[in-house]
Length: 335
Image 1 (cartoon, rainbow, N blue to C red):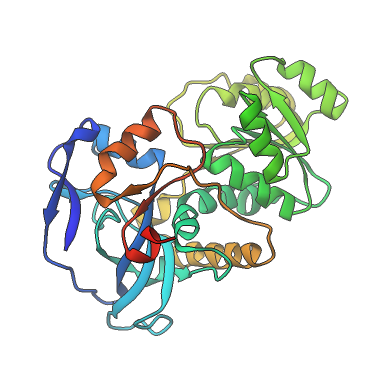
Image 2: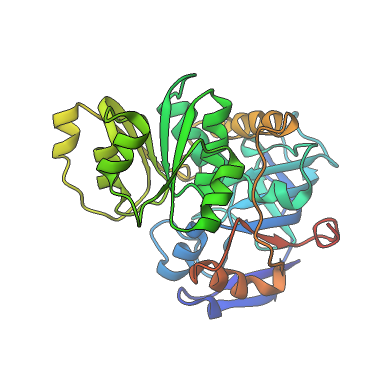
């Protein structure tokens, strides 16, 4: 089978086209013929930095899987050959990657493809949806009437988080950096828009909450927004943040009695903890898609398996508007 292989860690130039043996599924696994995948920031970080969680070399990257079951391993009863499935199930230490024509994955991580979405939209969802779900539903448990602030509302995780918070019945504000991204956040359902380059935390907290602060703040950027998240949250509020390499003063947490949730959805794959929950999340995401409450934004530029290096460069340059999808099978290339 054709894959995009890396033999060393570094710039996007490390990718090389290769032919390797098609793997066979073991117990509890399925073999999936890949139709599409997507590129996430974690993929670029693993390619550039390598260990400790990157695949062994030579290896194949790519977390998001969308395709058709070709074979099932011992003990798999929920899925069968021919099923259309999707999930976040590869690209890490000890696992195959999605940048290839086939991948063996643990069946528990997979859900049936949402009928309301095409293959490219389906491939864009897994990692960002599970991340946003863990923040909005599992950890902060957003409720109807909550006022939620999402940093990076036009980003991959952020634009999904807006939709999930709205589906939970919340009022949602989102930070953005341009008029174009403000339009994206509004289309996703944001009620309040904040251009963080033009308005201070104190000003938008006063404008949107009357100085009270937000019930839940989600830092979907993984950068210095954790500090402004503390400032924007109400007393006894909640803050969730995706993985970041950032040192912050936690004093505001104590003075406001805040609860901090750290979100790293890859934990389940790395440690084998509750893999079925990811499948459950994606099943519920499909139900939201069926009622027009969830739909990913796709970048307009098209990439194939042979364009992986260009796709990584496109993401790292900050040029993408929406999720970058990799067309692998004809079903995606013809969409």
